Image 1: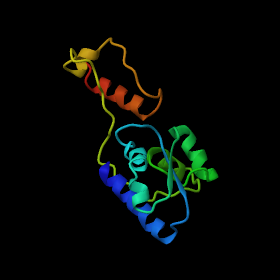
Image 2: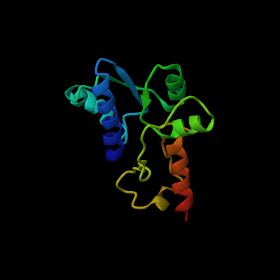
Image 3: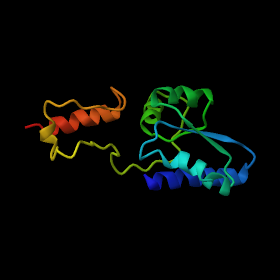
Length: 145
């Protein structure tokens, strides 16, 4: 994920050096491990330090495509909704992407030592129907007793 942030921010830096007065808006879906570098970069002054005038905006994935197509945001940090938009021929482009694996995690209380021990337990997910939900179902199905 760090590579993705570096590549995306590098593209902003190159663009910012050409058009330093233009403000860009970058959307991100959630304050998760994969996306938290963007708001942190803004808060810690990294973007300004590199002459990037950017506003980082949290936009849930379902609304991201409309925001991109309408010009409400210039970039979005999650690849999944954008790939779907490209497949549907919406006017968006993937600028850079580096995904080496899933960043979703399954976290449990210390007394659970394996996925099999979760059978019959209640499991919470961030967004029902979203990728983490599907990944959780797949993990539980794969490790069921």
